[in-house]
Length: 271
Image 1: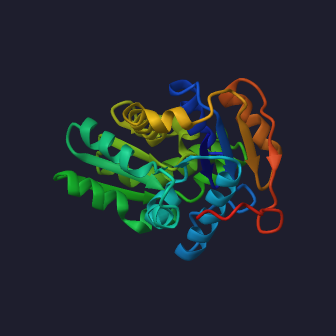
Image 2 (image 1 turned 90 degrees about the vertical axis):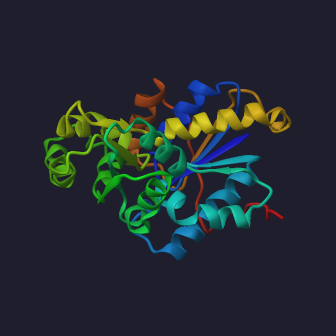
């Protein structure tokens, strides 16, 4: 089983990519909607939440983990790999960075993400380790709650997007990394503000492609994964908007089970 987790509903966009690219594999998803957003939290809190999320997915039978959350990918992916050394753990930062660098014509790349993601400086560091490029990063903290509350097509959202993206437009970037799995839900808004000349990179697509390559190269791991469509979806809270978002992504409502973090979460200890 492939386990996917995010701080909220944004990771469902990555699950959709899994269904398209690797439809034969069973997926278990956990969205920590009761504690969203992670991007405003401190590093130690993010690591603790991330470990609890992975513990839960392993308790449900996950043998591979995808960190759909860019905040966790930026701050805690190394920590998780050290904590769970026998579990292959994939993240969304590196694949998105590689694609952005390859597709940028003038090496003027923008990155938008949560406060924690941008503060980490990881995107800029990794991009400039590949080659010479100009990287402009911008925190967009209101984007996550706008998506969580289904405010995607509201006039306020356009105004907020124009405010956040103004500097990136002035810097004349040609490629923009959507460094949060919530942000693809705002793709039409971002495109409207930035214009068609700016290429938008959704790292979820890149991450799933990386996983597909890994499974093709490691058939023994691929063969050990459950292959059926009995997918499971869990969340630490189930807001009314969850059903709307899942229906938009999958064309139907999905069954979501609630997990009460820190009280009902009694995952098996992984050694």
